Image (cartoon, rainbow, N blue to C red; front, side):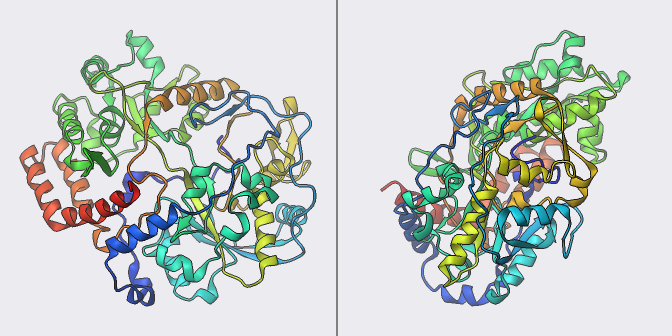
Length: 548
């Protein structure tokens, strides 16, 4: 598991969300307020953001990792403390009740009250009331609520990858500026919050003020996996470049044995093999977009070969079946996925297939040179406190956030994640908590969308996987680069919200042979004339301001 023992934690794919439509119509009053040049206003905001006094980072050393992080990679824990350190001396609350607006990807629970919530409320010295909305409906729900600020909950979770349209305009009028409370050394009052990475805090800065409390993310988020057991059976080595990848795929593919090389590489090939940027890149001081790069074009031509040679499972072209099931059953031996699914898949499949080995490719580069990997977001979610003139209430909420942000292996972390010993968990070997059915039934499963401690990797039943995971990720960090707007809140104007979707639709047609690279070249020109060049001008002005 990663930083929380929450099986319902959800990280949507970047690709799936890049084409999401804006919902700016829900903010008509806010939209009417802005009459200036959006590019100039955004550049001014970015300049102001650079001057914000971010919380001073102070490492929390309550529990040292068994496998330290490298260059920002996720640290690992293969043992559990015998005596759990305590990071919060007393319940931070003063008996108040706070409402929480949170997304959920399981059943929505209203009027939640059970042994877990009661124990947590007691530990916090406050009562938490959960206002849950299904994850797929969450942005729409927020749009409606933010239009009536009086209805906003006391503490609100917001998607880090896809906040509501014009959220940067809503934040000032709806939420509390936290700069006077936790900017600079003021954060020292809350040492667990001070332990959160600076880059994650930076993500919560809007219009020259700190508003957001981060849920830290991993800088390496995905991989091209291969079936190590199948490769070993066939006498194959993992490829290190595009030519080797094709050769290996040809060796694997055997339709008579119901085995093909790979699932769809529509994300894995451009992002992880060819090093195409997820959006913008700087070439000689000028912004170039994903489709305009040679790397993206080369990745398309590479994928065309995969399909033409019959190396991709036929269900991929037909858009049928389940990609993960094909990989786990051995119908394909190569599969792109998020790293969070790695351990879970291995454990589940090995129960019926002990030989199953899921291995991430390392150092893969189309040319055989040094790979290029773009860093994952410093924050998966961030959360905001409703604006209030009552400073004591804000500080009480920050104290609660500090409790919830306790790092792995502390008493507070165990309470948040596992509840009450004897009710929600029992002690296993080495003192590790082993969840009972009551934990799954009673844990709200949403606290990790508000704040957590720094990301940590642990698996009480498979420490070898923790070691493999952390060592692989540490190796990948040497290839990490940051995009030109990494860590910055740069609002994307609503007029460009759906600009990219036709290109993603065309990508599928091209690699499957339904359209040609000439069609792609024409589509790039259409993208530019339909708004791509205007969008470039907007972002270029912001980038130039950042570089001053």
